[in-house]
Picture (cartoon, rainbow, N blue to C red):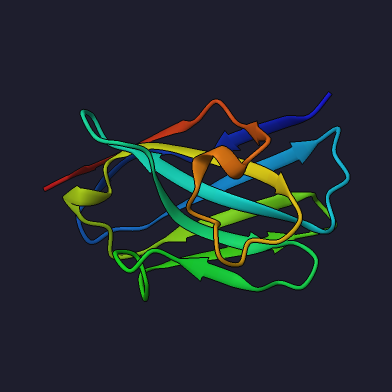
Length: 126
């Protein structure tokens, strides 16, 4: 049974940092795309960043480029999202998701993902 478990969310002041983790199990880890999405209250879920586990290519939304870094630890079957210089607009529920195959071209499309985690809440305050 595939499981994705997010952790690391919490409350942080604007300008601060958080690191989210997504631990995958029951899944052939290598050769897939794992992405982070977020959903703010009243807004649609949007792609934040993605990494192709096979080759390590990374993808970012324009709104987080230069501030967030997605990385993976293949020995731990875990993907991380390092969030620096957070702003109020980064508040939301953060989800990780995994799909078969690569990320290129469609990593932001929710329906392309096979499995989702339960989410971890990030709240940024001023």
